[in-house]
Length: 304
Image (spheres, rainbow, N blue to C red):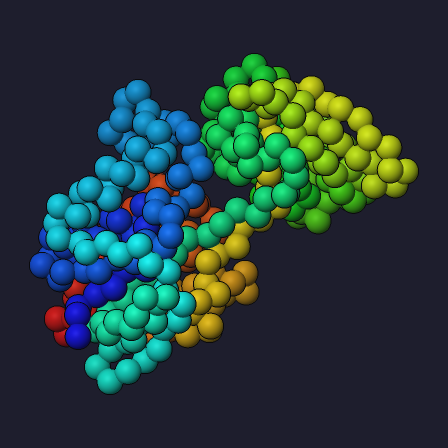
């Protein structure tokens, strides 16, 4: 039975691999079919310390991966389908086989919900984003839209007013579901214009976003809005389906942590790091930090 499995390959998973590898735990990291997590959808990353001129998201993840491998992390391109308790540890079942480990670090991340409209996938990283904190800076003196009506949409819109000249908030209903204080801030902001009862039907652009087509949900009429960026803020879904409630989740579906240590879950020996356990910050740097913590927590647990 091997020491530690790491499920997931974003900043949290790779950092856990670096720390567990340096602790001679010989970790095995299951990266899924696509390594790198959400950062693979990000073009320029300017807020990760150590890169004065910024770095491309996929390139940053290659650096993380190489560093994890340097310290002996065995990286497998497999998806874990389920996890179960066995004597002395845990059994992980993937499409390619079964593995047993004494400890498990879950770093499977969270996926942004997308609109699923024409042009959205093609222009991700070229004006289409799901993270204002990550990408807002690139829209100085530009016009952008935020799609959504909850607190996260309000936060994104308010954050973007620091850079953009105009922020449209597009919502499919005639009122927001966000908290009152957030609604008030948005509705009273001079740079923000709310487009009620509307959905985005199409995102247009050749190499970069140039406009969107919006449809009025009341009368069905369509119109085109010229802008430079579209921020989708309709929520994130933590990637926890494969766990099948193996560990306790919070009311939003994220893994509950903090039982004995910061990254411990409801099951002793199982730890969680990164966006799968974080509905608030969702940054590469915070994910990496919790990946480090989970590896240290796992090492100490194995020593107990």
